[in-house]
Length: 388
Image (cartoon, rainbow, N blue to C red):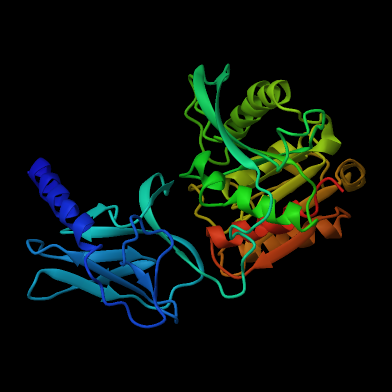
């Protein structure tokens, strides 16, 4: 029964691929989403940021769009299903088609690895914000490489941004930012959804950021015999081993990377923010710059029953009782979060605790929840403060 349902859904998707290119009557001022493929007209974004979807599925009993919430689509006599959503918050949002209860990707849209699977997504533009738009400036490269991890016993992928002119200035070396994705993502996150290369290209061209290498590894470290995930001590230990024993040696052997803490930064979003927090602050002799974006380590996410509240001094011995020693070693400890993220109050409270104990920390918040527009802005802000 399940096999028949999926075959039926696949047939519908083939029809959808053809439909979205058919002559669409887009209202004046509306624009097809930049994440559409093959110049499809649907979905399109209206000036007030509502999104219109149109799906041809004459044999389906129910079709929905799952975008921030579930929207029921309406069927016409030709078997076309349509819906216009509420105004969407600017930024990058995953969405799915739901056909008779089966959640699938939209063949009219690009797909991205996020939320633990390949998913459609739509990028809602933000008025006056263009720091992640491609401009007529010198461009660096995103290089996808494979290395063997002694920690996992497997070949793993890593994405590496090299700044404009890297291949021309063969005697020049660069500082390095190691940046981590969140849970349900991998090394593709910052390279694709995060638009790291475009953000850095524009900042470097404007003279607002130093030319740097940016390393985007896979933070999902499955060590043989270990099933640790998330913010557990074991998971953080596995990640630290992967970074110090495999990733950094690979980068410093194969790229013109400057060595030493003053030339290394580590940051990340959500789960990756927790990884940056633990790995960076426990090893200030290796990283002088630490950035934590929208992390749940301070609170604001569901905890396992009986799990203790976050204890900063226990997590990073001396961070509250010997704050001055961290201030001397760290050139920057940076924290950011979305203003509509349930983590914000917990984050602000922890920052107050840090500061009241003498720890220097820079904080910024941006409009939005737990999503990529906040993280793009976090990188844009953080990168300008590095290696000064």
